[in-house]
Image (cartoon, rainbow, N blue to C red; front, top):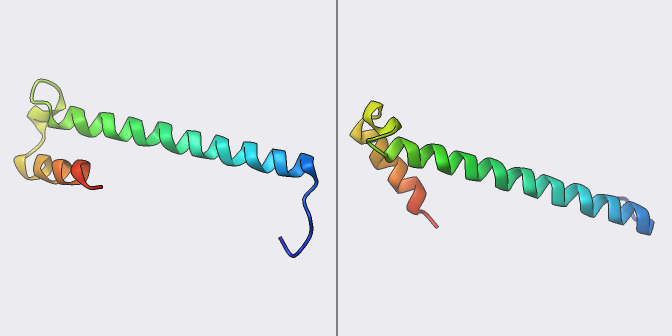
Length: 64
């Protein structure tokens, strides 16, 4: 903002929008993690994934 003050309602709406965005990001991250975990499981999608790709997935999943 350019120095303008938000009304309490605008601040509340902004907070809700940020919380909704954070929730959507968290849900997408969980879905991506689930897919990566399935790609590591040889009884699931892992049979179709090369060892090189599984190694890269493991590397990504253990990063902090």
